[in-house]
Image (cartoon, rainbow, N blue to C red; front, top):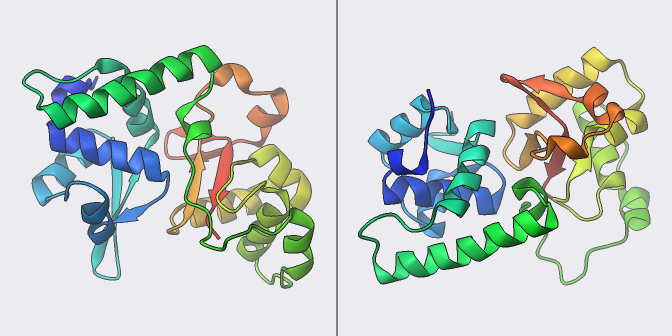
Length: 222
């Protein structure tokens, strides 16, 4: 089923934009603080359209964009304001339009532009310092986090799965299982490279299948 921005209400579009900007799973209370609250009809609709994945964690819903949701966000950025938009909404879409022009000129994907917020410390330690202070990991999921911390330019920065697999050296199936489990964890995002032209043969070979599309990048918040 094809979905366009005009199929969504202003609130539903705004929810997608917030999740795009946060680039991570967001729980209902935080979503309401960052933008519009997502009620049950809206949640059910966005899930049915394949734009969101919502999971109940500790008594509250946590939402994350799907691949289809990311793709529709790119359409929203380029669509312009919907009919009968108010002044504040027109302002938002003016900014989004400028963002769309930047993405087009620079050939940058949304996933490269947005990433989870960094840690609140005034200064981010260098990668070597993070490596030296990282405790020894016991499970493969722990070791994925350790390898990510060594490779990432910053907490929440994007790391290619090709680099991550090379750093781990574990069996592909074992790493796939760990990545799939981590992708369901708040603070972890595993997404596809939106610009397929940027993928190298190594990137394609290292992709993990989660859902119906191969994923090429991982980000983990501090």
